[in-house]
Image 1 (cartoon, one colour):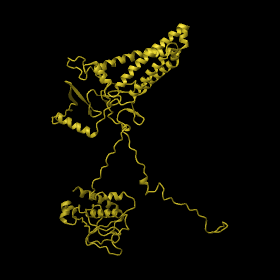
Image 2: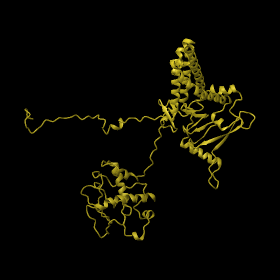
Image 3: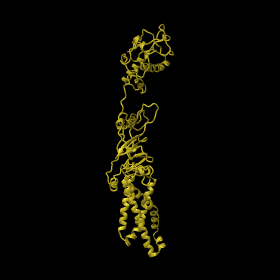
Image 4: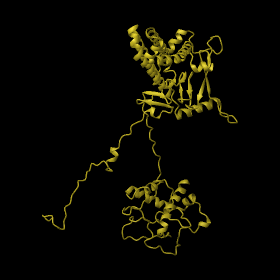
Length: 491
């Protein structure tokens, strides 16, 4: 190199160090793959539900009316605490805002508990369970009838002396337990299904019915409480400044009174209706259908009633809370991978052909075995052949392959293949016809060897007839070899 940076023949070179720990290295990439995070069951839940907080919150998909419920409760209560409670606590007693606050928090707590919980969804049957249930139905109803008739999809059980039918759900593939029903909005079978309530944004069933009843009951008390003390506030102000001036001084009280007046009737009526259902141990679904009668002496008496109002109320409100059956936060267990069956050497050639030009010793051995086995099959009439009078051309007896540098001995066909060298074996496997008498068959000893299989300089001679493989017919030989193996494997 010239010291002054002149025009010498050599130039400055910069060398960059090659990182051997690169993440793109083909040898290290399999070890650096990220582990797949297992999914939870709520992510693949088949019903029409929405989940929040990693599956802890479960709601119906239609939640617009639920947000309206929240707005009405929050706005009405907020206006009451902001504009009415200060005046009432000063003129009457400070207990009014305290009692109102307790009722408000109890209403919100029971509402959220009803809306965000599992109502008692029954898990759907797995494919194996559904198939087993179908077999049981066919056996129980007899499937040997002349014409096809769908078997009845009902079962009968006896509960407290009353026959109860269990209906089959074609969506969930299960026989629904007593008092369960399929919700068309949530697309789930719910245990002890009462009804689907859009105001809470969820179904009402076995696991959240008590919270729903506490919600509507406490909301009734809160609505009546706010409405009563708003009227009291307006009356006290009107005594001092007149009625019109009282309305102008507290416009929020007017809005609260209007909302409470139109909602108190429906809320109180709904609370009374569900109080009746609890006292008789019925559900809304059963009452609408008229399934049972309250009188014990009738034929369709209610088998779930304890015969006592107090006992029925305790069973519905104070009984143990059953756990959720769907396990929505559990992980999905991956399926066990199935092991591939034995290939018997038939698919090895296709696997070798699908690889790149890189080849190892095992691949070349399998490819060579396939060529030798296929050489014993009859070639198509379209292939050019020569008789015994013609001489084989040198340089045309080798089949080109990707593994030209591999030197091996003469391979032998696998033991699972029939012996193709004997005439009797070939006659049993491939019947010869008179029109094919002109075709000759090659034995493994007569088959042309791939390049590199024989040492250099050794002569290649054959005592029987051979086919001349031109460059155009080499590709057709591979196709004919595949067809030959398919015929041998089918026999």
